[in-house]
Image (tube, rainbow, N blue to C red):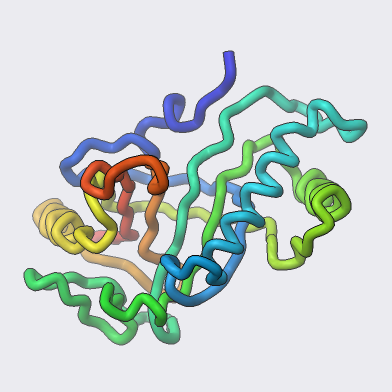
Length: 228
């Protein structure tokens, strides 16, 4: 049976359509950092996705290569994810707070109308059996096989910790309503938003935007929190 992270870790990948509190442990990712409008056809974001999947499938298909990874098991490549912000992040920045009109306050909030100002870290989760050495092998292998520059790809470890999250159904530009509900819920439960230079707005993309209508897109939206 092929291991599917979405099904085995439903608490992280398949939350309900109402907000909930979750503690996310340390995970390792394939990551590419960049900036700019994610909708640009030939933009940095689209290029980053190609790099991520190039490494992800090199690792998945390593079972057919001379390089054998200890502890390998067959698995479904986990979904694309992203950490997002705008402007310069500094410790203590109160980013991504959403008011009822969908506007974001704080020193470095997000304005969905200014997509060209986005900064992001796009990631795909790595199975726990993938070490940094395995990752470095995959980068060398993909570079040689695809004749492509993978120097922007990095091994990224991140412990997200205590968060509020919710399944958002619909277009990305409609997320502020979901974020509003998340923030109201966290406050009712005695928590406050804790987005800083190290803890960011996080999205997990469960739908193929090329094949699914925008009103049906499923996206996990997650924000870090702490006790008020």
